[in-house]
Amino acid sequence: MSQSQRSRVIEIYKKLQYMGREYPGGPEKFRTRCHAAFARNAGETDPQKIEELIKRGEFVIEELKALYSLRKYRAMKRRYYEEE
Image (tube, rainbow, N blue to C red; front, side, top):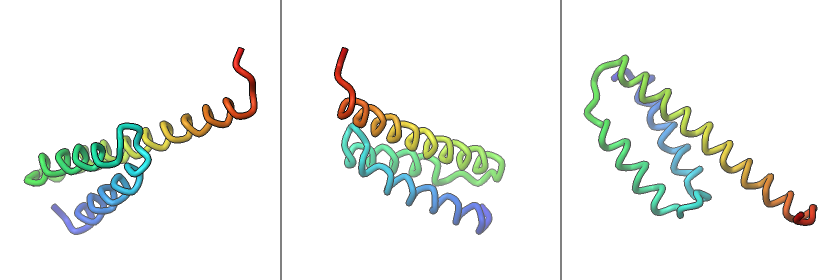
């Protein structure tokens, strides 16, 4: 693993840990699942496979952003509009 890939993996891990604080299932559950996923792939040495895993991590970050913004939108909608 090159140094740039290593730093990208660490950055993704830190970002996921930070974003997991608001996870609906609880931050501890998210943290343990995230750690297990990274530990499962810790021994990977193929640069192409590492790039695929980095892209998957970036995808998960984008999905979490979408989940959180949808949750905020629904909360605002409930606050300002009556239920039909």
